[in-house]
Image (cartoon, rainbow, N blue to C red; front, side, top):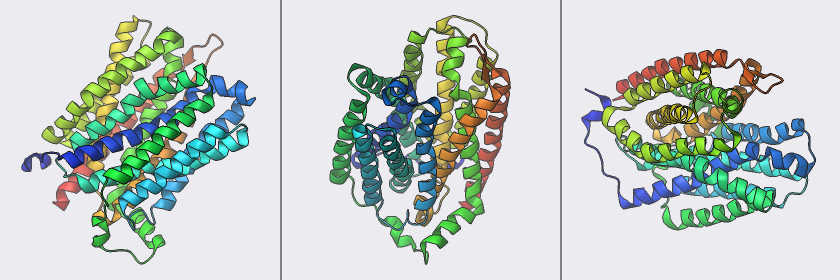
Length: 410
């Protein structure tokens, strides 16, 4: 019998729905901040009078500071009330946004990005720890389906809004508006979320270093770490030059790119809750395999695709997004079942740190596999596609291992 089918589906309470909404809006601001900087490159380069190399530093400091922060957080992530942890780290994130909004030099802007990385890079792991604490195993697929809306909304609402503010007014306004939005969210977190301290009753390690080492050395956790590292590697590698490939190789007009991503984003928003329900009903592993299979097929088609109509590309693009989204929902749902309650926060922080660093490595690796010709076309995408498909196949094997480990714990 399927592991998830043994228990009846637990209904989601009104309070849990409020927590889901807060998590979605919180992650929405984090994702928009992360995604908007590369999109603002055409504006920031002349505005700050910086080179492309300097802009690369500006982009990369977030990932590395977030990765370092994740490692440092593992020692004390489970020693405090989750609500307080979320407020401190999200508060630090919006302070970083304010520094960015007020910056008028590259140095101050870099400091702002470091602050947002140190604090914002850990917020997602805290949110996932809260989800793991407050929701039953047979609820998590549905919850992750709703949480995924934050990522889809960032594509079709957040990023266009950020670009509009930057082009219509000034790029500083984008950070200022999202600072104000973040301040409102922080107040809502304080007013609505109850203290989350149940994990504190599960016992404490003697010191912070011991707690970090226990989490890092737990062999049962490394299947999840490895899976998520490889999952991020494959997805980020394929998407790093995806827009350039679509415009230069597949002949998608530059002005049609927002429509292309918007269609995929709308489909993700509409179908993510349904995917979450399937995760709870059919099982996390089964849905992950189906989503990965769909993503592998789409990656294979895209990597060798010739010039076709825009709507053909739009359909394939939407299916690719749905495959990636299904992988994320099901893998995240099963990952929250793995750690022991007293190590859940540190596990999530360490996992997020590995993913941040993996994303940086993936973008650099993609740059070695593909290159742009003088006419703008991107060469090497078939090789990139083959590598990504192989990585996706490895994640299926790792998810099978994770699922078997969980069954042994029952």
